[in-house]
Structure formats: structure tokens, C-alpha cells
Length: 264
Image (tube, rainbow, N blue to C red; front, side, top):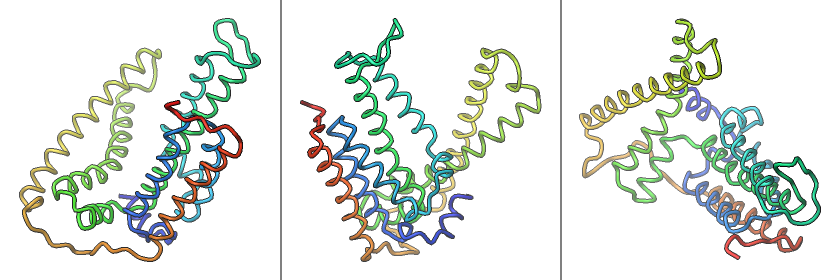
């Protein structure tokens, strides 16, 4: 709920673009990054994406709060790739059980930057897009089935509630002395128990929401819309911006001679 209110008060330019235009820009950027494993194209796209922070009303602090699992996953993936890849070039680090060479380091760096460059547009999209606007665009412009759209909207609304629910369950368990102390194994068991509690709450909430939506006629044959989803001039610039970032990443890799198609 806090995120929805923050979006309504956000005056950043990207918040006024049609969600489908922003989604198209994300697809263009991701498509180029998904076909190569070099680090130059990923770094180029990542720098361009950081420049869009102000246009989306996003800060580094909000980026970390909303995307830290993806950021950590990209870092761990890059490190794992660097130490597990076959050695090529000079050996930079030799720890006995694993080594890092120039080639494996470049591959790991490319994997990490590529993960960040693919994740960041999705975080930007979700940070400057109201779920209701996205649902309106999917139903009115993309002509997707109403039940699919309404299910997507409900899921997006429940993500924030699940995060708050996790904190509430954690505080309740700590008040009973569960999960706040003990060995790492005991804390792991407490975390698994908390996860199960969250799963139960999610199932109950989803069941109540499904019954409520069905009772109010959601997913019927005909629907009316309180707000019309429209395209504007800014949507053209958003799509062109995505295409420009994709082209710049591709051109930089080709110019540097590092372009490495994934299927080659």
C-alpha cells in the first residue's frame, strides 16, 4: 500500500508513460543482453540504465530495498562463474582448490554485469508503474483475458502485503523467543517455520480474495473501465530509448571486439 501511495505522488516522467511502452523498452534491452555473454555490452546497458534513475524517481537506497535479492544473486553467480569456469589466459588467483584466470574473470564479470543489467530494467519498471495502470493496459491494449489480468493485479497488490506479513510474523515469533537466538541450525529451522506461516497466510488471503472477486462479478463476459488506457508522445520516446540502449550496447561490444554470442 505504501508503494502505491508513493507511486501516486511520484512526478517522475516515466510514471506517466503507458505500462506497455515501458514493457516494450525492457524487452528490447533484455533481448540484446540475453544473446551475448560479453561484459562490454552489459556494462554499457547498465550505465545507461543508471542514468534513468531520476526519470523513474528511483534512488540507490530504493534500488537496494526492492532489488537486493537480484543484486546478490548476480554477484554470487558472477563469483561462481569465475571460479568454476575453465582457465584461459594468465592465472590471477591460485587458491589450490580453485583458480581464477583472466578468461574466467572476464566471463564471471560479464555474467554478473549481465544479471544486473537484466534485473535493473525490471526493477525500474515495477518502481514507476502503478499495478492498476498495468492491468488496464493489459486488458484494454493487449486484449488479454480479464481473469488473467485481474489475477496479475491481485498478485502485484499482494506482494507488498506479503512483505509486511513476513515482518509481522517475525516480530510475533521473536516476542515468543523463537528465531532470535540459538545455533545457526536452530535459526534455520525458525526461518523455515516462519516461511511456512507466511505460506499459510498467503493461501488464506488468496482464497478470500478469489471468493470476493467472484462474488463481485470480476472476470465476467463484459466489463467497463473507470480509466481508459491511452498512448501519448512520451511512450514513443520510452520505446525509442529502450531501442537506443540496446543498439548502444550492441555497438559497444562490436567496437571493442568482445561480442560473444551465447550460441556460438
